[in-house]
Length: 312
Image 1 (cartoon, rainbow, N blue to C red):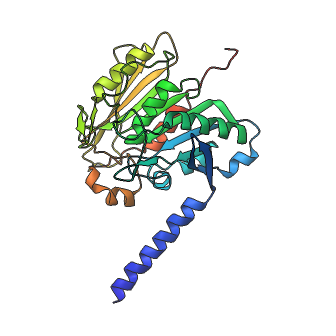
Image 2: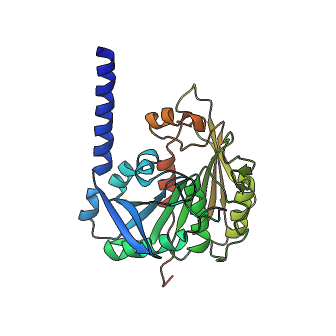
Image 3: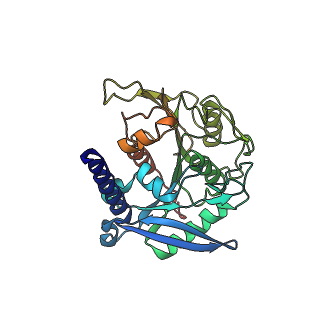
């Protein structure tokens, strides 16, 4: 009996901790778009209110069947936002029949919501409401949210300075060449043992995904980078880890854009460095690399890039 009460107490403490973590510095937002009410969560650090200069905006997209508050806790940028002073927005995807699961319409064979223009409208709304630097808007996402990053990079290059998709590539339904030819920096993280969106490409549900190598080649060509990358291996924080991270960086002689690949050896369909409780709950997604914090790596990448100002 005492053991059961102890477990229930710990669960209650955990729920209270998570709830407070979500509520702190967090606001709910909504816009009316295309005849629908679209919602999002905003994380605004206290330091924002003391800054005179405009701040960056980080868009953080949940995966298939996920939601914005789960993404806030799983792919956690809040402490980084507190230090660096950027605003984070976590939009909510719509649902599709018959499964009633949330998703992003990143050229998938399911659903028909115009998510690209919804994100564009949300960016414009937030820039109008907050002191945001329009040249420093970034997008990251997990799984289906990562595929949406790629779609946004192709269609909203006048609004987005860089993207960082984690654990997904584009589907074969996606146009192989972007309509917009402007260079845009891309960071891609993917586990070699991802059993959902396979590193070498393949089918998942009704969709077919291209390989990570093909995705990198597309962005290398788009950004006109060099063929030979700078390669290094991230140091192991845990000597018992079965996962190693190999980083490949492709740069260009003609522009400031780069293509960066984090190849996570033995990594699963996961967000590296996620909280331990999330790693345990989502163990069915495969091994989570804990030798690096994906959120820190992504932000360090983002802050190297911005859209050129109009007079540049």
